[in-house]
Length: 311
Image (cartoon, rainbow, N blue to C red; front, top):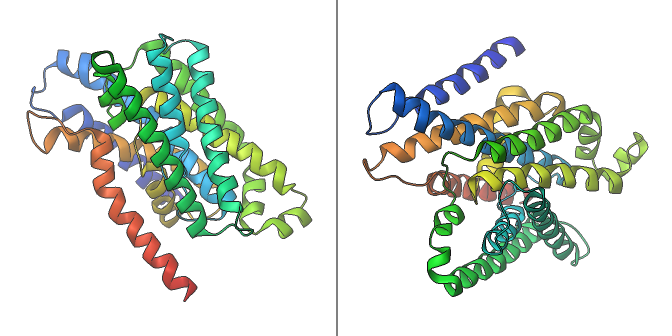
């Protein structure tokens, strides 16, 4: 049974890749596929894997099915830092750029978490509200900065909307290395994530330190998110939808869910990017817009389901 589900996931990923390579009004010439669509597919796979992984880690460590980098403000913090780096003239391939983007992601995540804990008890509603507030503030700050920069910032609007394009090889390789390292380290600590899902008291009795593990998984999730944002900008709901879909396919254990969420996120975003090229050809809808159209109803359904579970 497990083998058949793994094969199903691999088949879905391959199908999404083929769709991404074939989609578009420019035809099927080898030049178009190799020079335009393949680099873009690699960017989509990288961004999707990072966001899917981050969503699985956030949901596991916070025991909150509504958690994802977009809703928690992680993506907004990373995007704000990236925009400021662009306007300051810092190259995207520079280690300083990735360090700044990670700092933005980590700072925004902990601000959302701290605001949610002010009420004394961390709840789904308080975490979502805190994340929305932090995201709204950072997004407004980015828009204000871009408006002031005028023509210098025109090209950044597509990045802020969450668009995929052929990334510089150095940027893509750096992002792939960060996401791969976060994936390997997370997979090695799957027992700690499963223990955290049982609650802090049970995790402590199982030998895990809840505070330490929370920081470790926050760092890993923020690293994966920052690497994804460096390539694709703000793309929401990949980290929300993917772990839920993968739990149905692979089960709740972090041992399988962590790599499955990375693969599932890659497939989901590759399919979304292909869909954006097919909706209004020859015009193109950014992948971030496609994911918002699909993810917002999914989020509302989860919110409704969560509220019914409390009643």
